[in-house]
Amino acid sequence: MTTGLRGRRGRLARAWSAAAVCALALAGCSVQAAADGGGGPAATAGPTGTARPKPSPTPLESLPGAHINIADGQTVGVGMPVSVTFDRPIPVAERAAVERELKVTGETEGSWGWVKDRNLADGRRVDFRPRRYWKPGTAVTVRAGAGITRHFTVGRSFVATVDVRTHFMTLETAGSSRRVPITAGAPGMDTWNGTMVVSDKASKVFMDSRSVGYGDQYADYYYYAVHLTASGTYLHQNPKANVYGGRQNVTHGCVGLATGGPAKRFFDEVVPGDVVKVVGSRDTVAVGNGYGDWNLTWDQWRATSALVRHVR
Image (cartoon, rainbow, N blue to C red; front, side, top):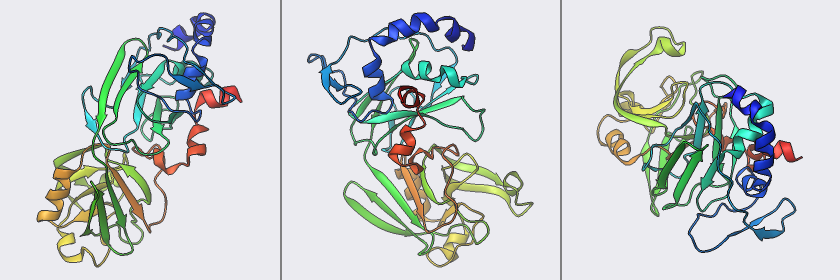
């Protein structure tokens, strides 16, 4: 892919010039990315903020080796970023060109940003994050070059706030809320602070403390496991929560729920893209440790876009 992009640079520069304003709208300019509804040309804001007719779309080039994290037809939570990964690193000089080949259509304001993924080389991941959480019910289309298209829908809002100081989690969804006792990371093994997004879940996961540097302290199956970070943070059933939930933090960094109803109920409700915020802890989770994009301010996030840097 790297060789192909270099070879096409002159031709792409001419072809993309007509779509520059539209591309910048998705790359961090403070405008709304409106869904194509067939109702006539939409107005977009140019670099100076002046409204102008939306230019005719330019055919996308191929982006071989690109992969999108959301399945076609999937329903996701309001915090899910669109994450595109590549089979090989994209050089810094070519990242603006790649961003121009990535299109998000939906009623939101957002920006692409390059993320150093915990498990990938630099230049292999770029995410699209809305300025604020997606609006429930939003229909979104993503195109990565000429060959990959995904359609997904944003479901109901579901945000869980874990307060490690009070040992309770507050769940807010569909205008209602409830509090659930939890136990979080013990001192020295603190749960990550900050905003995390559910990447997946499994009814049973084998967890081995040696994989996270805690020796042979545990090696067992845990149930109703909701995956939060690439480094191994889960929100899951933990027998210790039967005793310490709502009282004390005793885990190795995960958030534990009681074995009975609380763990299963949370597991059944949550979907990938739902938001889990941890407050009152210590170190903030890194952007590339799972979907940590929301731990940057909007201005900080926009600054990670190669196109925003390119126009400055």
